[in-house]
Length: 572
Ligand code: TRP
Ligand code: SF4
Image (cartoon, rainbow, N blue to C red):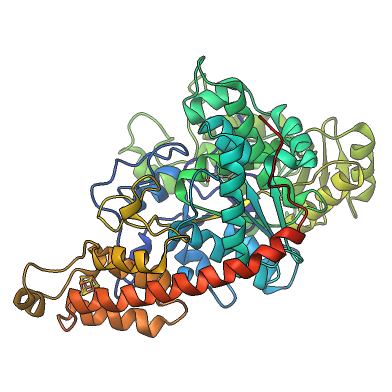
């Protein structure tokens, strides 16, 4: 498999969807398990059951479910490969990813990479948005081409905001993004509504998506606005937009509610590709489960023959016999009694429509191929290639190769070489050559009043536009994870993991200072820290942060004015 789709073009929910560089890294463990102590601030209380809804309430009951149910990878597994990781990564605030390994690798090697995220201008930018701004800016500092976009089409169609409101909020988002350090010369800012190239890409991607799919992913129905559909396909175009000049690993930092968009886009990107690249063993086609079995047979049989006169002489019939159990399946015998009905119990894949197991199917195909030698090879499948592109690919496969009707097999290249060759030929012949986009997911901040942080409840969040004194007051009156009395707090310690104030330290106020964040945590759970003083300290830091941020916003006005972004749209 080269992309995250199965043979029906559906997304496999059971992996992190990324075999291009991190094949089977299945995420089982919770991300917290490695954090000692839990410096991530914990999760929202009273959250919904796990459901990823881009337009629903942004709470997640159990982040662990996202790994098992949706196949999001644990960020911990990618962290080692990240050069100089951001504090949000180190502290487990960024907890999940899809395919981030290839972005980290590109950053490590100073190869082309991109980062992009989008903001719906539905209200003031707040400290939750700051997480995403910071993630983008960090990627920009690491050398990625970085994009920030205003999702105005989405705000207008899905949220019904007027263009005048959208213009005003868009300005506020952009000022904060610039104030926090985004470099508009090195990166790009755009509005969806203004970007013709983006809309052309959206149109092309729309050809790959149909309404049934939209319905099953987003729950759309006959009453859904057509413009809402259009905003979804526009977001898919946003996600691939950084690759229009050249394919490159691209990360989309977002909250996990955006994962459906990421999955859809990964799928659409795969569907545009000219060639599929797979491993194969013989001239016939095999699905993943069949291929796994054939690979196993090949490995055992070629090892057995390696020293004998029959070296290299493994033929399809041998593998069929081996799989049928004449020799190699002895291993299976002991378990067979236990598995009374099917041999598919411990095997990959599942029975097909006729009830045949992958093993049966593999055996039949191998038998049909008879004396054909079994030999590992790389197969290029012609998916959407033009005839010229397919011809050119055949031409460029070095070494021994075999050309068939809809595919060409190469015997002397490895998988990675094959993938870049396929991409190169595609791009040379007018294709996009998209690299499957990656994503990273951050935890949602708990509201200051407990429950979820909501833009529509001012006391629950701190707007980046809040007067510093207001910010101070909001922190002073925040809910805490403290005990009823000071005595109890000294005796039992506070519950930092349940405390929105601790979250403020970990997500924002402690900034890059891990020691400080850890000290607050340790003192809290150790009972040395009492909530009154702790909140005062946090409130002062918040006041300071807001004052400083707003000064920088004022400076950013001039920068924004010089940029080519129309914030007075004539739309109606
Ligand atoms: N849908 C996103 C939101 O609700 C905004 C968005 C639009 C976006 N295009 C994007 C996010 C591309 C990430 C990447 O906030
Ligand atoms: Fe929260 Fe601070 Fe109280 Fe601990 S001491 S519960 S971190 S406010």
